Length: 115
Image (tube, rainbow, N blue to C red; front, side, top):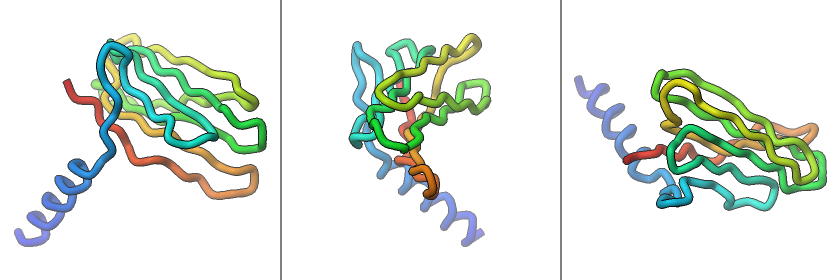
């Protein structure tokens, strides 16, 4: 029982410490770093990821939907953006990830969308 309480407390702490997403009429976004950005529309059905770097850094967004499906959308190199649309349900959580050409995958903290 003590282990379960510790796990639940840690989980609640991590959720509370997650960065707040920008919300409102423009949706949610994460653009804290110069290598890329991700934006979720206000209706939570569209996601756009952009690779704003001209170097060899890969940029993508990982997201999950209300139907518990996980997806990835990759931004092409050199300032291009890629879009994805959710047909069933809506986007509930997303995060921006990157990897230098010969490096290790790094992801920003997940942003949970709450209404």
